Image 1: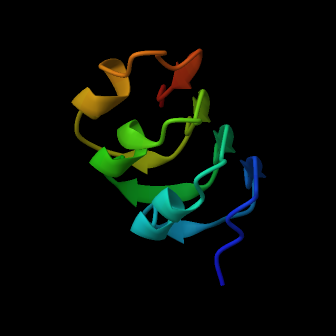
Image 2: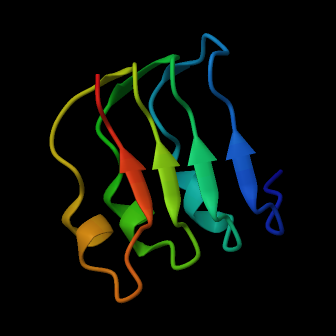
Length: 86
């Protein structure tokens, strides 16, 4: 079940583990994604950079590896807040 009209997904401090699912890209209206202070691993998926409405991303304090997806930095409008620290 994907909630396509969701604009904000804030799942910080919930002890989630695993990777950021690719299905998140199906939430076309998503503007804010916060998943800080969990146990998320892997990389930030490239598809998140192609989400046109997404302006705020906070995935601090997880076990993410790799680099920020290039698409997140190349959008026309740009992201207003991206935090990958820790």
